[in-house]
Amino acid sequence: MNILLLGGGGREHALAWKLAQSPSLRKLFAAPGNPGIAECAACVTLDASDHDAVIAFCRSEDIALVVIGPEAPLVDGLADSLRREDIAVFGPSRAAAQLEGSKAFTKALCDRAAIPTAAYLRCDREADALAALDDFDLPVVIKADGLAAGKGVIIAQTADEAQQAIANMFAGGFGAAGQEIVIEAFMQGEEASFFAITDGETVVPFGSAQDHKRVGDGDTGPNTGGMGAYSPAPVLTSELTRQVMERIIEPTVATMKAEGMPYSGVLYAGLMLTDQGPQLIEYNCRFGDPECQVLMLRYQGDLAALMLATAKRELADAAAPRFDDITALTVIMAANGYPNTPDKGGVISGLDRAADRGATVFHAGTARDGNHLVASGGRVLAVTATGGSVGEAQRLAYDGVDAIHFPTGFCRRDIGWREVAREAGLTA
Ligand code: AMP
Ligand code: GLY
Image 1 (spheres, rainbow, N blue to C red):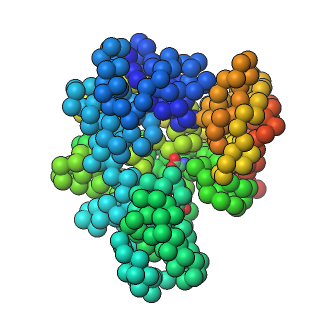
Image 2: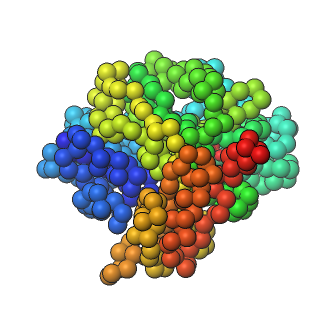
């Protein structure tokens, strides 16, 4: 079959790399793609917000499946437009994508389905929000309701900080995303990402990972989209995975179906592993970036077939996803300045040397400039390797990083640190 993949980041390069290995694939198109994706797909120009143009492309290229990488086209209803035209699509409807598009929607769903999550209050008036602060202990979490590129969450240590965050959101600091806010109790614990694939009815686990959101070593500095990840996350033991499926994922899928908004695609749960068990921090309606990069290195099945079965509501008949029993670890190389304004245009070389050392290098924000590969975004490369332990995967990933020449970029040097320390403790 022919497949159209929408997106052009590191997540989409990993998806393209895996889709290209699928026996059921004939031709892979990507829009817009990037120079890495161009090695395994035909990159085309298509505006994902122009639904008619996407449909027309699918007709002219005989596309049997559209895979939507990022959240924005999902929240914008592209999957609905494609389904109306009988074009199979991997990704949820606009109604189901509210699980990522609106934090208040997700919190209300947790109430209805008794899903463990932090206590919260939803406010659409500044005065109400300020008055409600007294009901929460410190630290307290203030969130803009809508999509804010991962930046609409403030963990306030003092009442002053909380008041400022509320004032800033209602003053438009996060645009329309902050017209409504959610105040949440702070959850203590270790974070992990959990993935499940569902066609609206059948739901299967699709691996775990841990991300590193802060820009600096030791989890310091501002939040980013993610500076590195590894999979699996050993903190999510098989017992905790069972709890996550039973208490969080399955009730979510069942409730969405019962309420006429069946969720189809990948459901990405951000979890806090608390003393009381796993609690939901948030949902995303897409793969994580860079979590997708490490999942794809471990996934052993035919991704195109799995995604098509999901799109056609035939997941019950598909083979259960299988993962290699190894650790995959990825290090993001970012452009200087990220997560603020990144330096663009810096020349990158040495990707072949990294590959010779066994690393798989996914492109996130790169462009071609004549004969040169240059940085064109904040997160530029995801240098990925596998090993028998997190420590080994980490060493091999940094061997890859050290083979790359990118003088206007930087990376964290400690991806996987929590698990490496635990492994050292076990073997000492
Ligand atoms: P979110 O965009 O909802 O994933 O939030 C971004 C980050 O803020 C999460 O990855 C957590 O590190 C943190 N966070 C969000 N909500 C809470 C909470 N209720 N308690 C503790 N940390 C939180
Ligand atoms: N790595 C975090 C995310 O994709 O949202």
